[in-house]
Image (cartoon, rainbow, N blue to C red):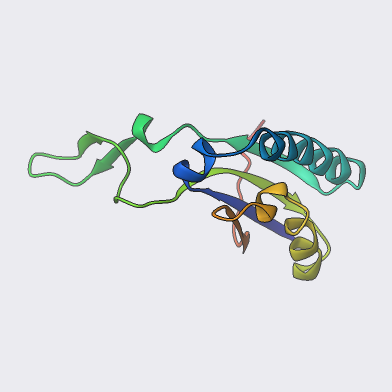
Length: 122
């Protein structure tokens, strides 16, 4: 079963990370990717740009309008994700607990099952 593990980021927390915490994140994500690739559970991962670089398209009077910035004002934003193919939810939770972000107050991960997927033709 496929699960998406979403990494939620508080920019204030990131700005105040100690050198040790930065190292924990970098090395921890490397170890997480290595383990899930070795186990055949890794599908992909992506890190996302800061919301200040995003565009939002929503309905407008003369058709869709494009605006800068995130959809809503929020303290946290989606910083990236892992897409995994695991045996069950328990394994997804087990793996999510290994993501280094969960060791730093103010950061979090969210686990969601994938209910539909279309990977295209290649």
